[in-house]
Image 1 (cartoon, rainbow, N blue to C red):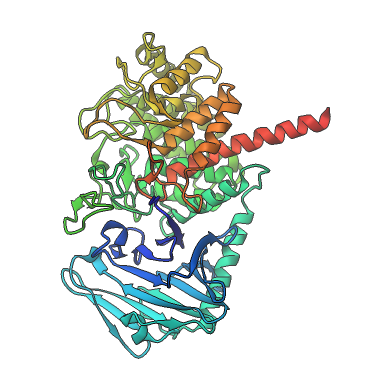
Image 2 (cartoon, rainbow, N blue to C red):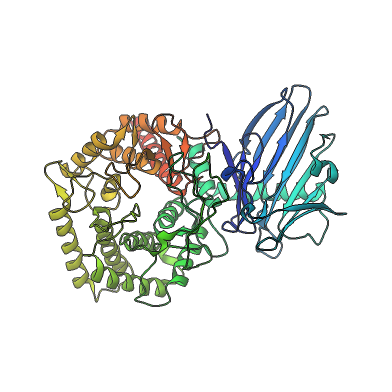
Length: 599
C-alpha cells in the first residue's frame, strides 16, 4: 500500500520529498513556496522527478542518519552496495551566519563491489506548465523553461553528464555526487566539497538536536518530530509552514486539496509553543519578530495566515494541467482561506506571547512591542468576540458561533491579564477581568448541551467537535471537571472510529468528512490521559504511532479503513501534537520511576 512513503530533507529555506526508493518527487526552489522543479507526487506522468534505478536483485532500505535531517537510502544486492545521502546544506559559515543555499546534494557513497544504477533526471520547472529543456554544458547540466516564465536549474555531478541525462548505466567505484542548484556555482564543486557540506550539515543537526531534552520514553519519536517541525520553519522571516506540500488530498479522488506552504497563525503559534518548551529559543524569537513585523497598526486585525515572506494576498489558482495526487484534482496554488475571519487566532497568539514571557521573561526581546500587541489584541477581541466566524476548520460557507473560537477569545483575555501582571502593567486589569468572566459565562450558557451531555461544536448545536477537547489544554476547564469528562466520553462515542477521530461528523461544504484528522486523535489521547484513563490513552497512542510511514512521519489525515496517510505532508499539526502526547507519557513514566525508587 502506498503510504506517503517519503522522507523530507530541507534547510529552513526550502524542502524536498524523496521516496523510499530514492526518487526525488517534490522540490520547490529557491524557497518553500516557489514553483516546483519536481512534482511527480502531483502528476506521475508530467510532474518531473530525479530517480535512481537499480536492477531487481537490489534490496532498498531507508533511514535518517540518527538525530539529523540527512536521509540515507541503501542499495544492496549482497555483493554490491552503495548509499545515497540526501541533504540540503545548512550550517554556520565563518561569517557567523547560516549557510543554507537553494540547493540539494545527493552524495553517493561506495560501500562494496561495483554497484550499478541508472538515473532518470527529468526536471519540470514552473509546475511543469511548459516544456523544460536540458543541455549538457562543460561544467554542468542546465535545464530551462521560457514558456510563461523564464527559469533555470543546474545539476553538477562527478558522473558522466551525458550518461546521466541519457539514462545510461553508471558504475560506482568510488564516492561521487549530484548537486542540484538554483543558481550557477561560482566555484566548481567536487566530491570533497560535497562531503564537507555533508559533514558540516550533520554537525549542525547533531548540535541542534542536542539542545532538545532527552526522554526515557518515546525519545526517538519526539526527536524526529522536533526535527520535522524545524524543517518547516523559514529562517529568513521566522514563519512556520503548515506543511511542505500543496494539494495532497484529505481523501483520494475528492476535492479537499489545499496549498499548505503558508504560515497559519494558529498552526505556527502551536508549533512555537512546543518548540520553546523543548528549549529551541531561536525558532520562537524569530516567529515573534515575524508577528511584530506583520502588525504595524495597533488596531490591525490579523489575517489567519500569511505568505512565508509576510505576503498578505494569497490568491488561489488551480493548475488544471496537473492530474493531482492519485488523480485527485484540482491542484491548487495559493489559498483562498486567507480572507476568512477566525476569532480563535488571537487567543492562540496571546498564549504564545505569554508562554515566551514566562520562559524567557528575564531577557525577552521586543517586550514593548509585545505589550503593544497584547493591548491591541484585547481591543480587537473585546469588540468582536460576540461575532460568528468560520472556525478552526475553515468552513467556506456560513459563519457560526463556534465553541473553540469563543474559548480562544477567553484565552486571549486570560493571557493578556497574565502578561499585564508579568510586566507590572495593571491599569486595565479590572476591566479585562470583567471581560474574561463575561466570555466564560457566555460559553457555559450557550455551548453546554445537556441533551448530549457535552460542550458542542457551536452555540445551540447538537454536533460534537474534536477541537472542543482543547478547552482543558488552554486552562478553560479542569480535566477532572464532570462536564469535561463527559465531553471527552461523548466525543469518543460520536467521533471515534477504531481509535481514530473525525474532526466532526456533520456535513460541511464538501459533504461528510471521510478521513481522520490526525491531530484530533492526538488531542483525544491527551484528553483521555488527563481525565485519568492513562493506560487506555497509551494503548491508543502506540497504535496511532504504528500508522506513521517508514520514517516515523505523519501527514494531515489517516484513512479510517486502510490506515494509509493522506493530506499534506509532513504536517506540522500532527507532529506538534505527537510531541505533546509523548512528553506527557514520558514525564509520567519518569515520575513513576522516581516514586518506585523512593519506596
